[in-house]
Amino acid sequence: MKRLLLATVLVIATIAGLWWPVYRATRPRFTYVIVHGAYGGGWGFHQLDDLMTADGQKVYRPTLTGQGEKYHLAGPNVDLNTHIQDIVNMILFEDLHDVVLVGHSYGGMVITGVIDRIPERIKYVIYLDAVVPEDGENEYTAGNGALKHPNSKPDANGLLGGALLKSKAKLPHDEPEPAGAFSTPISLKNQQVARAIPTTYILYVPAGKPITSAKFYAFYQRAIARGWKTGIFTSDHNAQWTHTRELADLLEKIP
Image 1 (tube, rainbow, N blue to C red):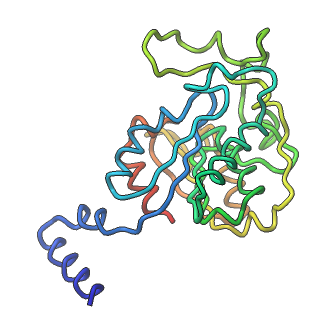
Image 2 (cartoon, rainbow, N blue to C red):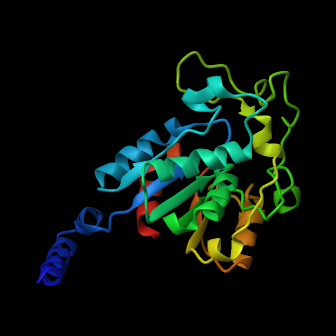
């Protein structure tokens, strides 16, 4: 009876030109954990969170140690393993299950480690214009050095990128990245189990640019080679700011 009623409502809404708002209101609900990229923080996905939460989704957007509001914790002791543990601990302490785990940019390094450590908590994985490392690779070596890092020399505090970041008086804003985040190789122990989890890779390609020019194209190719679902999203690297509604709709359609 419920299915018949929903089908009837959708038919009426389609005729009235209101199909998409009705679908958005009736689509399945999931628990999303979104992991930000280098220099950023959970703050960068605030608007995306608002839209998805309004659609009935449950969204977590934790900030990695040494970034965003946790910038005061940055230092030479912070590395990729710290960031992986940040997300593992959040999922465990929030007692989350059937998680849709999303990683953007450097966040791909992090979620790869999370999937490997607690695969039983993950329902679906989405890489958004992100690094997809093999065992033993780090941010610099992943994809045969596909990403170029002009700011690869840490300062006296063990941080990267400070000289390249624009000075901003108003918060929130990007912060330097702990050097260990990029230099630490990832160690994967449960690859067979982790790779059995359904995964989608979304490559961001700026409007009018060829797909091969995309910065993360090498990882898109790696995703294809692994047999993952893939897609192209027309955007710059920070779709969470420039195409927020479209990205929210995409994330809610994938699982």
